[in-house]
Each structure stands twice: as structure tokens, then as C-alpha cells.
Length: 371
Length: 98
Image 1 (cartoon, each protein chain N blue to C red):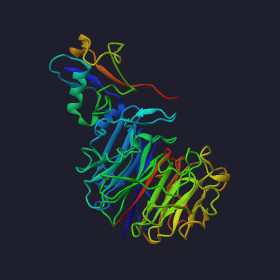
Image 2: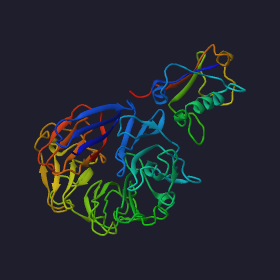
Image 3: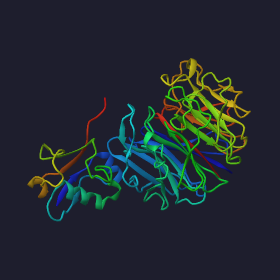
Image 4: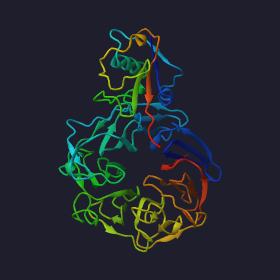
């Protein structure tokens, strides 16, 4: 019988939650790395017990942890993220040149074929790769070396490379997203990169349709249809049907098109989920109602999913990495909040129930479907 | 025998209890002591000093014999009491935040 394992990163440690295929009762272990920020954990698609975790602290910097038993035990591996060559400068908030400085790992993306091969998206924005299970890291410097790199600027949360998507149909094609530079794609395994932001419109930047400079919060792809991408931008929910070459808005009837996460149903590539947030200065749900919105039409037409979620006096946020789906039937959907709740739905979002209510602020949620 | 007291989070990371006790060949300085600590506990590399510049991390402080040595050059000799093991070399996470 299948089982589900949730990997939850919080402001003060990591939690591993497991359930059988019924998804009704959960065992929770943690905090792992208590007191440290855990921005992200992710398991290898080919060896689900191989899990990587990003552990960081303002005091003691970055640590990468690796587990070979699904998060029961951990081993600290390599944490030397040295930019290739002379780091150079990007632009600071005030538009002045600012040296690249490594701060933390936001996202870990294990390879689709090799559990020892893993990618790391970091702040200040760069992409690193390890081919030895996280012991050593090398920058894929072509990204930061893109001619636009020296003009990238941070978003409010820092200049982070927060999303990495490996295309299952094209082994050398990756997508990454940076706040606030936008989406980039490589078709040669990271040697060269192209901005993929045509169709985005951001009123808060000098040229609203600039090739680079958009605050993309999250992108997602359904593995069965790699040419289709969905995006939650700072404002606007967007869709691409040509592998990022162009985008069109699909915000439709959302109560707010600001938000952080976006995800796709495991079995229905046209069914997607977002969590509308009131505005960029009010990081809480509109009207104090925590609502996941689901579109079964690939965007534009959205329905509020409210059953089991607080519909008054709720002022939490759901961060970009904190929405996940499992691969069971019906599809399970999960999200964590800055208030420390992790909610789950076993029926594709129709009904929700809290799995846990009082964790530290949740930074990320990943769902593993285990045999 | 040099004694080094690490903050709780680094003891947890290194899976050790109590003070670190180790021998340091040659001059006993911040650099030689931290080099020896990191050689025994490689997972601590980068947590007290930057990997590349070897500069002390901003929220990490070094004390010994009641003195704040954080601003001392890394190759300055540590007090004799540290070199003899009479006093520990203290690595402290700065009090920061609200």
C-alpha cells in the first residue's frame, strides 16, 4: 500500500510527516535541526529515501544535510558555495552596484536520474550542482554570467533563485526563476541561458515589459506536458504553452492575483492551485479568509476551496515553496502557513483538514508518494 | 591541550558534548585553533568563518580570559592560559534580535 511523506521546512527546523495511503493519521517527527531555518527539503525521484535539506542560520551560515533513510537520520555534507571566478556585482535596491554574496540555499532539486546529482538555487541568485551527493558544489556560472546578470536586483525577500524545474522530456533543459530577475531556461544543461519573460507585465519596474527584472514568485510544470508552465508572479497568474517562450495572463476571476505558490494536480494537467494574498504590502488572505483557488481549465476560471479552512480572522501567508501535491488517487494537496499550520486535502482540494497546527512558520512543503 | 567551548547549535551539528579538547601544533592563535577544530569536525567549516575569506562570521564572537578577542587579527597569539589549557577559547553566538 502506498504511503505519503511530507517534508516540511520551517523557520525553526524541519519536520517529517508520514501517513499511509488513507492520509488520515500522521506521524510527525522533528524538529530536525531545531532552531535553524530550513528553507527546503526534497527527496530524490529515483531514491525517495535520499533526501536533501537546506539548513541555515544568520549566525552560523549554510549547512546541507543528507539523509539516506527518508529523514530519520542525517549527515551534514558540503556547504562551500563559492561563486566561480571573480564574483562581480549586481544591482542593489538603490540601483548601485553590489558584490555578489552567498547567503543561503533556497531550493534543492535532485536529478531525475541520479540520487547523487542535485542542484541548488541560492541567494544571491546562482545555480550550483553537486555530483557527489552534496559533498562538493560547483556553480553553473553561465546563468549568473548572462549579460543581464549585472543588472539583476533583489526582491523584498532577497535576490534568490527559488525555483528549479528539470524537464523530464529534455534532459538538458532546465527552467529556473529568480526574484526579481524572472525566468531563465537552458537547453544545454546549464552552459547557456535565455530569459523567458515575454508577455510578463510588471508595473512596478521602469519598463513594465522588460526582458529581465520581473519578480516571479513560482513556476510549475506538469511532468506529462513539459511545454506548459504556470507562474505566480508578484502580481498576476500566468501561463505559457511554448516552454516559456511567451506568457499570457490567466488570473481571471481570482479575488487577488498576488500570491506566492502555484501547483498542478498530479493527474490533471489543466487543474492548478493558487493561494491569493491581498497585496504585496499585506501578506495575508483577502477578507481574512484562507482560500485555495482551483482552476480546472488551465486558468482564468477559478473556484474557491474553503471547506475546512478558516473563513474569518485568518491573516497567515502561504509562501512560494509551501504548496505540494501527492500522486495518489484522488490527488492529495498540502500547504503550510506562516502561522505554523499544515493543511491537507485527500480529494484534490474539495475538503481540508489540519495535519498539524502549531509549527514554526512554514517555509516549504514537499510531498513524496512512496510505494 | 587546548580547550574550545562551542555554542550549543554547533555542538549539535558536530554531535559532541562538552568542550573540544585538542592539540595545536605551533603557535596557538585563533586561526590555528579554528583550523584544528575544523579538521576534527569538518561539518563546522564555514559556520564560524567564511569558507573563502576565512573572516569571522558577523554574529560569531571569540572570547578568552574575560576578553573579547573578536577584533584581533587571526594570527595573534592567544593568551597563555588558553595555550596551556587553563582557560577555554570561547566561540559564542552573538546575542542578536529582539
